[in-house]
Length: 361
Image (cartoon, rainbow, N blue to C red; front, side, top):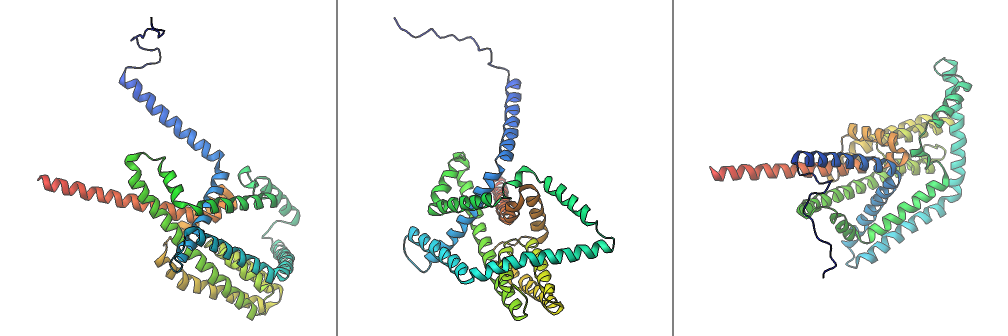
């Protein structure tokens, strides 16, 4: 005698045999799934940004590894070790050689900016173009209090250091085995679409590598030219301003505006001659960067329209804070590359369809 219970062929209470009901339930499940996915994305936007920043850092390391592979026919692991050690030596050497001067200049820059800001706000207040000091303090308190929880985590030094450490670790792990992580990502895609997904994935990462290579070149050129020109003109804190200009060059448009404001404020703190020299330096460097470096880099990397990048930066900074502002361009470049590949695929499908129809006729 078998222990198995007898089977019944009667329909279950939750079984819907009508096609209309099943289709509607399927649609409802899809919409609920999309809503849940968007809610989870909003809740996890901070760690997702950190992971994406790690991907950007890994792409920088991968670019260095690939470039080094052209001259050193050794294993990828050894090339990655050389690139990481070179970056560490460069950073430590820079801070060692300029550490004392940099510390003094950072302190001096803060006091200079506070003094210059006080002069500007005092002049505007005297002209009736700006509220008084008490009103300004109230507005500042309100604006600081209105900052959402989304960007408050980057406000503390501990949070910034921890975030940076996580970005470096994630980037290092991704750079160790990029192909393995790429295959793991492809595993989540249905098998029928994996080939196309792999092509799009390769295009996106190639675009990101070229974008970051161009950014690094622009940062080096702008930082060096700015520092040397300010030193020649006798502008205070030329070394620090050159480093800041190079770092902010990673963020086009907005970074240039911030750099110019800092240079002009510091220049006029040392006198009118230094101030006008700072203005001239800013205009010359930005003109050279905009009409020589950027077009040259854009031809070999990614040509992003300025209006598109600026709009993306504004939206990303409003939604995600400082980290979103820094990552706006990589996000835009990757999205543009993916959309271009989709357009190419649709064009290929249209050609195949037209060819098939022509063969039938």
